[in-house]
Image (tube, rainbow, N blue to C red):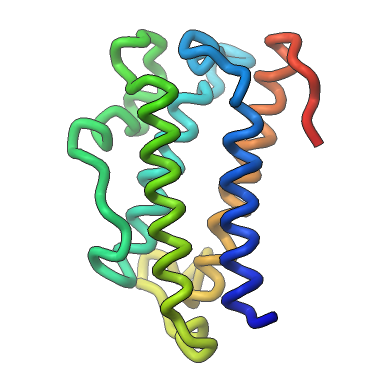
Amino acid sequence: MTTIDLLTSVLAANLEMLKGHIADFTDAEMLVRPVPTANHTAWQLGHLVGAETGMINAVAPGAVPMPSPEFTARFTKETSKIDDAKAFPSKAEILDALSKCRTATIAWAKTLSEADLEKPTTERMKTFAPTIGHMLAMMPTHAAMHLGQIQVIRRKLGRPVMF
C-alpha cells in the first residue's frame, strides 16, 4: 500500500463515517445545537465543504468543483449563529455537496505521486499543513473533530452513540 492509497482510503472511510452519523437526522435535527453557542450539524458540514474545497483549490486550482456562491454564502462565521432552516440548504443538498467535494478530493489525490506529497502548500496553510501530504492527512482529522461535536448532538437527540 502506498501513502496515496492509505490517504485516499482514509478520506473515503471518513466520508462514510460522516454520512453514517447523520443518516437518521431529519432536516430539522440538522439545526439542533448542543448548547446555544455551538454550531449545528448543517453549518458544520457546509463548513467542511468550504474548507476542503478552499484548501485543495489553493494548491491545485480547479481540482475540486466550487459549490455555488449561494451555497458558500450560507456557511460563514456570521451564518453560524443562524437557526432558521430557510437560511441553509436541505440535508440532502449538504450531503450532495460534501460527497462531491470529497469524491473530487480523492480523485485529485489519486493523481499525485509520492514526491507530490512533499510539495509545500500556501503561505496561509503552512502553520497547520506545510505540505500537500499534511493537508490531505488533515482533511479527515478536521472532519473527525466535527464528528465529535455531532456525537454530542446525537446524545442530545437521544440517538445511540456511534463508534
